[in-house]
Image (cartoon, rainbow, N blue to C red; front, side, top):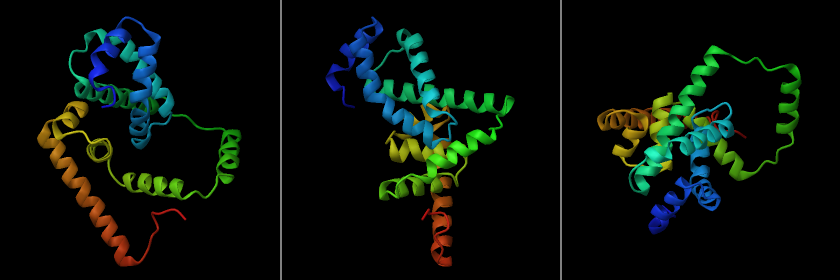
Length: 191
């Protein structure tokens, strides 16, 4: 919570349209929201992030609470925008053209074999083994360090459902990792 004591002042200024306040809000919250949207498989995470901030601008006057509540509210908005994007994707499935595929391949063949990139990809591969709700719970609870109650509010679930999802997700990850270790394989880790 980097804004700390300044949070009410920054939020009030943002509500009055102060550019500096919006820049500060964006700088503080956008990176973790973008990580969340990316980890949840958003097809266009930057677009989804932009939609989150558009909704924030529209609905800021309806928010009341402290900084942790604001952060949870932002993640709930992000989750809702993500669900909307999934629904829209099912209604209008996109078929990439061959040109887009060639561009994608040429960009990704020239990426450096960076250890941090490999680790990040390994985490994404492990998270991809989970269902949408389980993945969301793990990202929110472990990576973003929300409480069970905050996670429940973001996902619009009960705290008990969040605990069950987290338990099942961790059990599934443990089983997959144990099976992988026993087989001597590392097939889910790139490189």
